[in-house]
Length: 494
Image 1: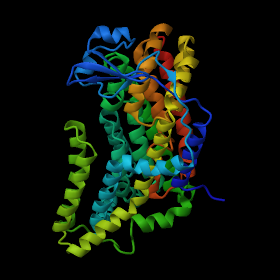
Image 2: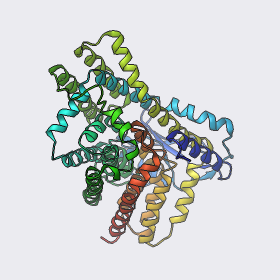
Image 3: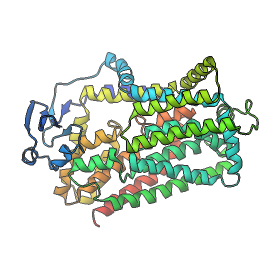
């Protein structure tokens, strides 16, 4: 008996979600969206209607959010209206819906999937030049005796990206690049995955200025995103320090005795795949290869700048790597047929990852079609309403952790839940910023292991099993869970 592949795990979850739709009542909150062309609010739900875009209109329907959050474009998605939950006609998802869900998921996630495939093609072009192998050898020589710095630098930089602009899906691009570096430094592939994925996850868990989580959540809660930032900065510092200690502790153990690696049985396979020793025995970097690596690195710089400063998304990011691949082919003087072959081979290596992204999106589609997400939210709001403030914030933390399995989008979770949960803070007697923090810490914590999130796609890039990741990460998740709980409870008294 072996642990199933990531694709099978997701299909099992999809089947369970489809089954839940047969037992859980369907229901929805009415949705409110601002129409800038007519300067009106449109409400959809049991009845469709419009109303003037004024603060009085928001007060009348119980939405305690400043009008400018809508008119200035801070809230651009439909938000749930408190007190409007209503049951809808049951929509159980059958066999046909189950089999169509992954295909619909691929269709909806085609922008991400295309990014992954084009990225794979660009990586294939670089691999065909031998620049990766020679570069890894050169870097390992430079870091000899100071390999631990690689862990600190990579994890910290990615965490910085996560906390500032929500670096998450983009990290898929880093695994084929950084895994060979960590293997050459004497670590295993798990250390490379940990530095990238944990760095991104702790950064987004303790977001400080991330527009896709803390800013949109604060806007949806009716508060300024600066409120409570001191606590989130402290959470980021303590959480990142804990994560670095955890990764370094495991890395030192593996470097000292490789047999202690959780994926030791894959050691030869991974080294053969990522280091390609047979084809590149101790070759030094040529000037042409250095130029190719510089262009490849610049693709990441341009991508990160575009996402953080120019409001780029997947189409623009994909274009950067597509153009980069063509430019690197010219620099390497690769023939037309050889270029196409290396590009297709590289894309093929990441096809499995692309399919996982589509299947995971299909699970969300099943919940949307079955209309059970709002039902879960409604029942959760009833469960935490009226509790003492310490117990309330702790239970809300747990609720957000659970909801993350069904609503993996950070911005989607924010606009759906904040208008429902934020007013409860006023009743309990705590600041609304704690609701925002509970949302971030709960969703961020579950992201470390969320099978409907990015972890399965990330593991598939490196061909590491989900069971191995769980064995590695669960002690850290437990420590972070207690850290988040302590931070939230302390926030209710200070």
